[in-house]
View (cartoon, rainbow, N blue to C red):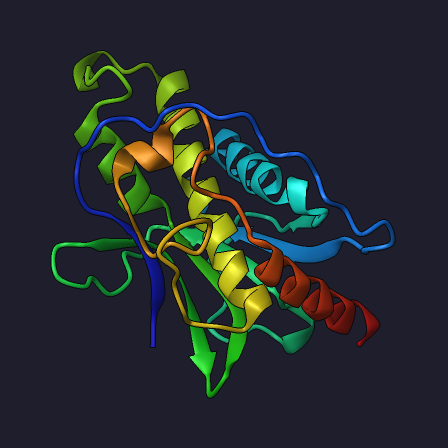
Length: 214
C-alpha cells in the first residue's frame, strides 16, 4: 500500500512562523541514508531537497548523514545494506483521485521496505502550475524553479522519512505527518505545519536507536 503526500489545490500561503526551538536528545546518533537520483535532475535541486528535509527534522534533534550515490539508473532490488535509501526520480507513483503523490514508502507487512520514493516529475509539474509564489510561471527563473522544486521535494522527503522512522502508514490531521497539502504549503518560505509532536518524537528516538545498534 502506498503512503503519500499530495498537493491538490491552491489556497492562501500559510502565515509565517519561526522554526521551533530544538529539543535534542544529546546522544542521538545521525541516521545514515543513501541518496540515489536520476541523471537528469539538477544537483542543485538535490542539494536543496536534502537541506530542506534536514531543516524540518533538526528541531527534534534528528540529523541525517546523506550518502549521495552517482546519478545512475537505480537497480530494482538493491542489496539490503544500502537501505534506508532515498530514490529521487521522475516516476509518478499511483494517484488517488485527483491527487498526485510527491512521495511514498512501500510496506512489507508492518515494516517499511527501506526505500523512500520521491517524485521530481510531480513536484516540478505542481510548481510550474502554480507559477512560483507570485504566479508568474512564464517569468520564473531557473534559480526560482530550483528553489521551489527543492523546497517541495524536501518537505515531501521529510514526511516520507517520518513514515519510515515511525514504521507507520498512518497520517495525522496536522503536523509533519499530515497526508494532504496544498502547493502553497510546499512552497511557502516558512515551515509552519511541519512540526513533529512529542509522542512521535519519542517513537522516532526509539527507532533511531534500534537502527543504529543493528
